[in-house]
Image (cartoon, rainbow, N blue to C red; front, top):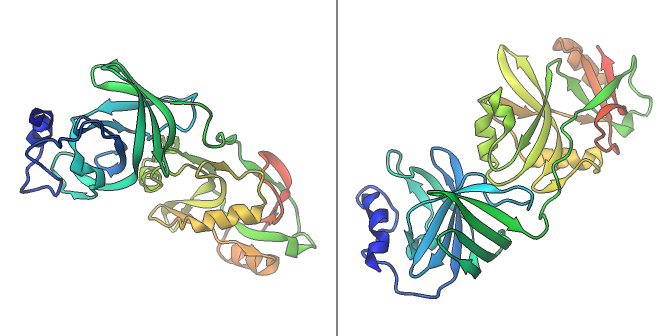
Length: 315
């Protein structure tokens, strides 16, 4: 039993890492505990660990558990971990194997439906991770993980932005609108899933934003503008949050969900919004040399393409 952890121990120095390093594996055959740890190492991933014959058989899953049976995720098998790792969380020093921050994302029990060298079929019973999954080996250490059954979240919405209709004057029923600056930048929708975003291909600095979301999925709407000589992504809408589509929700609900995220960083921020205040916002936009103001109906859903629920009033 003790040789099951030889590879684990060979990768770790007990004088440098706070990780548990027992001499032998636990003698608890038949146990069925699991843990999923969120691991901010060189790249963000989730570690899935299933108890088996006194150790935690482990896979690193870069994008986390799939929420949709139509999408499989890569799972790379790593060394068996000791049972003490079920509750481990903390900072593994940089320069050490797996250096970075590790937190317990979920824990619970699981039922085994099949276990072989090439396929592991199981049912997770956790608070955040629940349902039937199958791990199947594709090549060497590389496996794929597949969710069986129905999806556990809404599908991502269309990535077509909602566009304002030009209008010379503010609406007369100003109390029915929120007023925001028109930034004169380039529109950008940012989908985030599994701590990653495709928008980082063009804007690498968005990797930090995506990683900060962890396993939380989102689709953000905003503009890349240059303010004070610095490129800044200004967010002003939230189309999808934590597995739920918000496009049918009114602007007020989407705006509240966006503000609750507290998005503030060196390269991104949440745009200010002023309900019912057309005149002061227009004056401030003129003073700052901005091209205009966008009036957004408080009760409007998010509809891709041109819409009369959003009005662009030039300065």
